[in-house]
Image (cartoon, rainbow, N blue to C red):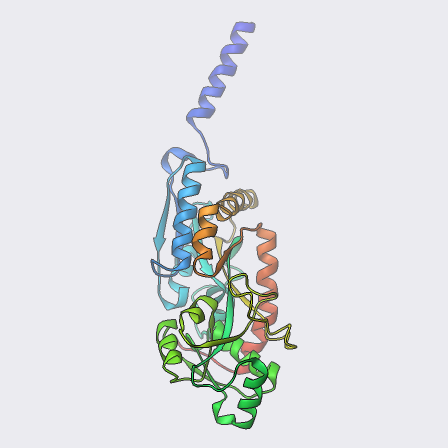
Length: 323
């Protein structure tokens, strides 16, 4: 009897090993985890996703592939993942522009950011900064405010895109300093940085890493809750007396709606651990981004706070984009 019992236990263990599953309950021998990045190769999201994929593949002993589905400000990737089976094998890596700002601006999205997705993990945070061109005769934010109030035609700023976070952060800066700011939308940071360096536009609101690349431009303030470790000499708007001019960008992972809660939790644990890997942190630090890693609940609270802040402001602006 004891011999028979031992044989049954050994057989059960062998069967369990043969049918080994991922931590989220998917049979490992014939499944591949797919991480869909809604932006092109080479950017921060793509770089970090590939590092996370490598770390997850190693820890899970399971293939993890990265697929770039760029286009329409992240909408193409989101539309793809929305239609994926809710089995934990397809995740979306995207940002605040796709999941918060854009849906409040675009006439058509092709997805519902709340109903169609479940937050899995917040993995990257990035800051924005306000900078002025080399020919603008100011050294700090107080002087800039005096300058534009005395010369209202100079109250013009650029951002990387119409309807992007830089656009609305810049308008919020204007409200905070009680100046009617005129926005100029560019097609990306590169042409904006070039125009700022050439003094073709007096000011810009863009990510911190982009502003750092604008040689000879002067960064007057950042929009974070505290000073950046990358530019500790630059004050925040809040410490200068303008707390409403505040906001940060992020990238994170999302699962299709109806993905089981235990699957989401298991994926989040793996992703957060990978996001905190030293190599990931160092790669992001080099471009003034911060690696985070959160639980689904923490990420959900961040998204909810951003929606509460930005959607009313966007709706009040009246801006609607066809594309």
